[in-house]
Structure formats: structure tokens, C-alpha cells
Length: 127
Length: 361
Image 1 (cartoon, each protein chain N blue to C red):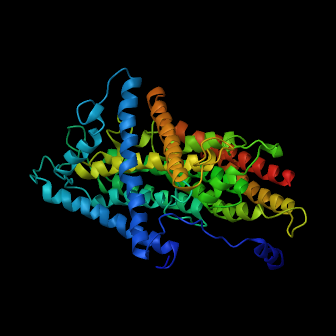
Image 2: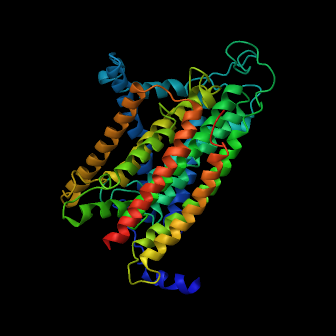
Image 3: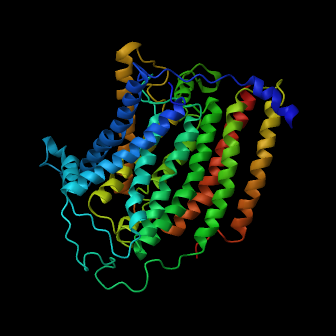
């Protein structure tokens, strides 16, 4: 493969996906009727007139969950290379498999402590 | 630290991607073949899954399902597509027009790209990336962006709440999904999906010589992965983001016509993708039975593709079955299950696999 190797193919596929969506929308544009009316374009709120803006306030809980997620997602990025290398480690290699295992347990343990703290603080409860 | 890391780097074998059958002819031909492959996986296979849902759900509810379009109603979804493409495209006056129009494309492209690394048979895949598992998890989670955009751009309270619920749900269940996938990568020693299937072919149950798939040592992981996959797809019983009894249709409320159809197509394609990933990670990919290898040559490729697609459809049927059998969860129950049950359990699963790896040698 040329075109920058395998990830070049991914880039071409990305462009293809965008073009596919564009073609479908173009076909739709050619075939659809367009009869807008103020009532049709109003915001849907079960038949009654919409009160206030659709961009209303939201629950702050979502923000805390997003924070928790970022912490663990970064952890996951460190876990993947560890998982692949771990296979090639043994009792005699430097570092030994046991060393790598304990190191990762310490790392995950630190993060779990954070989760336990959030749990104890009641962040994970929804009421 | 450099003194510790350096020897490891020399231990690592250089990754050589498996040869894809689609790499024939010139660069352009193989590129076109690969694009055709992901298009079939995205546009055709989900239609089969959708038909299975129509008919399976109908039979489970003592109905007949579609019967008119095509033999036994099998062309119902094609007819739906033709209908959708002729429908007026309504964009609410209050909506953010550009974001509203772009939102369905994000999920569509993300799912389409994810199919590039799913292997159907030996040699029958578009790409064998060294980071295949990482790639598919990363790309497929971009889809949440499209859902957030749809929820926000609609300028509708139902859509906004649905979009936020979807985002919170998808990030909460992303974690158990990733942590279980890491455990599989740990056992296989590679992130390449083709490599994971091949590792399962040669893996044995605790050195007894009995062949096995990863579903046997990691039954817990398999359960967590399937649950998390259901939640990632917002399939019932995890369909609070589009809970129709409370949120009309969640983030899709204001969408109609072809854009609505795009969301629907992405959902069905997502079912195929997640089932495919489950098959590759836990159910031995193209292997018909543990320890039973495919014949060589074209017959093997055809058989392998049939076996993989068959397993995928089996899992899709389980998803439909679950939809019919279980009522919807509440939003607080959903978050609690993920953070206080599934995340700790998936870490336990990872620890058990890692310790087992050290003990075994």
C-alpha cells in the first residue's frame, strides 16, 4: 500500500464517508418537496406552544460524570501499551512480569481510590 | 526510567500486518475494493439485521411483522429507504441549521470507518492495523459527538435532555467496554483484531490442550462487554436517551425524512459493529468451533465469512430478544450500575487475567 500506508487508506475512507453522506443528501434534495410553513417549522413540544428557549439549563451531575470519565479514559490509554508488552515479559526479563503487574496495580489502585472518594462523597448518586 | 524501558523495546517483535485478500491489483483497485467492503458492511449487512429485528420482534410479540414488500417482507427496509429519500427535509426555525445538518454525518462516518478493521474471514478485512482494537474503540466513540450535536442544535428541550443523557450514558459505559477490551488484549498479547482471532485459535484452557475461545476464561468480561455494548448503542433496556414514553424520541425528536433514516441506519450498523467486535474478541471470530480450523483457500474464506456473519446475527438476535423481554431502566440506575458495578468488576476481570498470565508463565 502506498498513500501513506494503512492510515492513508483510513483517510481515504473518511473522505468517502463524507462524500457518501453528501450524495445521499443531494439525492434527497433532488427528489423532495419543500413546502415550509411557520407551523411546520415551529419547535415540537407535544402540540402546545414552546415555552422559553430550547437551550435550557441542565443537571450539574453530568459535569461530574464527565470529569470522572476523563480520569479513567486517560488510565485506559496507559493500559493498552502495558497489555501488549506484558505478554513478552517473564520472570527473567527486565522488568519482570511481576514488577509490571505490581506497578500497574499501584496505578489502578490510585485511580480506584479517587472513584471510592467520589462514591463516598455521593457524586455517583443521582438524587 | 529509561534504563527500565529500553530492554522492553528490544523485546517487542516488529508488527507485520496480515495480508488482506483485498490487496490485489494496483493501489486504486485495492482501495476501491476496501471501500466496497466497508460499504457492504455498513449498508447491506445492517439491512439484514434490521429485517431480523422486524421479524424477530414480531414473532416474539405474537405478530407476523412485514409481509408485503418483497418475499416475506424482506425488502421492507429498502422500501422504507426509498420512501425516506423522497420526504421533505424539515429543519425547525429555532435550530442551529449547520450543526443540525452535520450531526447525522458524524455518527455515520464514525461507524463506517470502524468497519475497516473487523475481520470476517482469514484475509477478508479492509485493514489489519497494529492498533486495531484501539482504533475501533476510539473511532466508534466519536459518534457521541454527533448525538450531542443533534441534541444541542435542535433547540428543543426533549432533544437537549436526550442528547445529554446519551452523552452521560455513552461515556459511563465506554469505560467498562475499554477495560474489558484491555483484558482481551492482555491475554492475546496484541491489539490487532486479526491477531486476536489467531491467538484464540491457538489458545488452550489452562495448559490442558483443550482449545478454547476467550469467552471461557473471561465469561465475566464477555457479560460486561455485551451489556456495555447494549448501552453504547442505546438499545433497550438502556434506551433512556430516546425513551419514547418520556422524551418523545430524545435527540432525534426534531429530525425527519432522510436525516432520521441516517440515524436509524447508524444504529443498525452500530449493532452489527458491536456484535462483530464481540465475536472477534470473545467468540473466536471466524472459527466454527473451538479447535476446529477452516479449510485453506477460497472455501475457507467463504465459510469463515459465513461463520462470522452467522455469529454476528446470533448476537443481534439476542439484542432484539433483550429489547422485547426487559423494561427500560431509570437514568440513576443506569449510572449506578456502570460506576459502582461494571467498572470495579471489569477491573477485577483485568486483574484476574493479569495475575493468571504471571502465574502461567
